[in-house]
Amino acid sequence: MVKFLKITAAILVLLLLFYFGFFKYRQIQANKVLIPATTETLLKINVDELYKTIAVSYLKHPSQYDEADKKGIKEKVNDLNTGLKIPANIYIYALKGTIQHTFFTRLEITDSLAFNRFVLKKLSLIKKDSNFFQSADSTICLLLNKKTVALAFTPKKQSVKKVLEEILAQKNMVKISDSKFEQLAGFSDHLSFQNAENLSRINFNDGKIALHSEMVNKWFEPAAQPKHRILNSESTVNMWLNGKFKPDLSKKNTAVSSSPFSKDNFLKFYKGYLDFEWTNTITQVDTIVGYEYNDDFEQVEKKILQDRKIPSITINLNADDKAVSNYLKSLGALDQSTGKISSAMIPLYQFYFNGSNGNVQLSTIKSARPDLKRASSEEFFYFKVDFKKLINQTSIPLIADKLGTFSQLEIKAKNSGKDKIKLESELLFLNEDSNALIQLLKVFKNGFKSSLNFNFNVDIPASSK
Image (cartoon, rainbow, N blue to C red; front, side, top):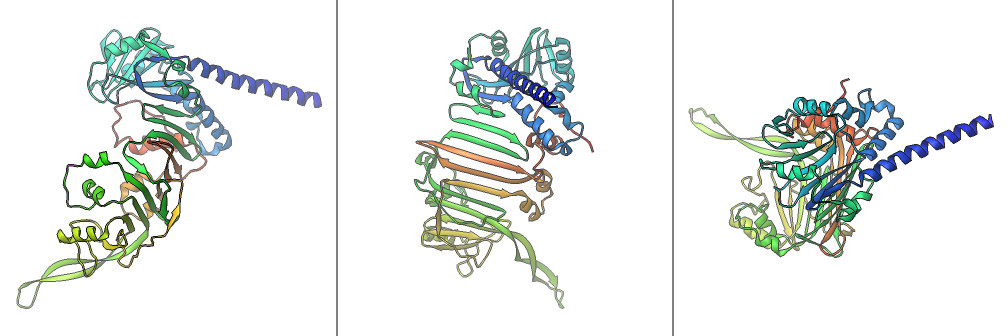
């Protein structure tokens, strides 16, 4: 029995060594890929890491996946019978001198006949010559030979054939290890993205999408020691921002608007701090004006009070409260006796103005009074929305339809050096046991695909229960 267990353990160790060795070899080979020397932006899709993460999720939570899901990403790609070799990493790049948001990539072909069928039937591309294909609106273009294909995705019609020829022939290319994107090759994250101003990494785990990003900050100067009002952690939405907008941004404001929420007026009044809080739903009494006939058959005005459920919203802004008050009064938008702000200024809900000690408060709650106590924080920006509460507190079917899969979104940003910020975000799903990418694909298949035009006709396999 002991001998059997030792043999079994040895076999398992060998299998694990082979498994990890195989994926390590694929990563090494994939990272030897060449990219154009003029690459300005690089996106890396780590296919193997995605596959391993989803495979582990299948093993941990088999009941969360039906047979269609259990095929996994690789099998679903194979179901499309693309005729392409799917590498461990796929690199997609934007090049200097091309239209903004135009991306290119290069892949190997394993079955040229299958790939031609895929191009004509699944992608619905039009054959322009023996080896060049385009979509009807020219936003997808590809050039191929028997072993390789170069692809372009562009938002505007432009001539990309020459660029594709160079990519296909691997002219003017460099190794990633010899480029400014060297660090991207070593990342194990599911998606990673880099350009001159941004380095981002995204991972799809069970019930969660996590984003980590470091970016150049040219427009905002975070507070040296951020502080914020203590907001209700159970709120539907809460947010704070502590810092100053850089002068260059203010100079660009040429539009003039009477709204205090216009960029021009906001930057004029804003003094380094803003927060927003939506705690729950309250009842607000609206006055509905109608008309009826009196005994003399004369039409007279009749006011009717009507209860309406609205969000309990409070906005606090560090600002010269007297200047804001005088500005609203000059527009005839502030009732000084009640603090009401004109519905012409802020439609949808009735807001009340309260200003004191360098703080301006706008709230749908008439009796709201600002609590100016602050707590220290590492983050100069924070945002959180509870989608479950948002759906329960709104009567907009579109919100429930599009956001019903999600539980919460949280975004944090902090200063990470001169003109740099670090941003971290988590998008949580209601289903905590199913992989986030599989859930997201289902959302796009069942909800967003009809409303968002990706100009991409490949069906994402989805289960039908």
